[in-house]
Image 1 (spheres, helix red, strand yellow):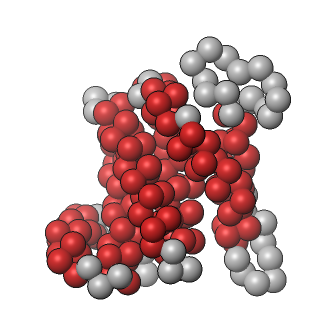
Image 2 (cartoon, one colour):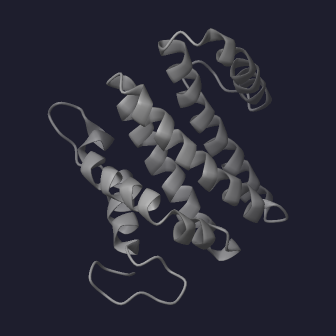
Length: 168
């Protein structure tokens, strides 16, 4: 593990500790009486997202390396959660910006998943589905129905292929 303020190996973005802090919050949400769950990690998600934006080329080059697919996976989950937080608050401008960054990470995750074990490619497809689901909800919320049609078809096809129920 790389901690805040500790030296980082070559090729690892200098603020890698922000990714680790956000990942810890994402996978170990602090329970609260309000039932906010992953919302409690919002500050660490913001900090990580802002660093992704500020050091975009470094991070994207990092995600391009096949050995870093798990970091891209974690990042997609964090960004999807942050985008959902923004969407639920009606902050669709920031929701769209976070989803655009997630799309950039997903492009790299897809690239490194080609030829990898089938489970890795299926994980990519699930993350892509989840990202598109948040985007669909954002378009619906903003009455951009013309942009919903293609997304709806893709989402429905994924749900049918994977036998997802309404509860999923």
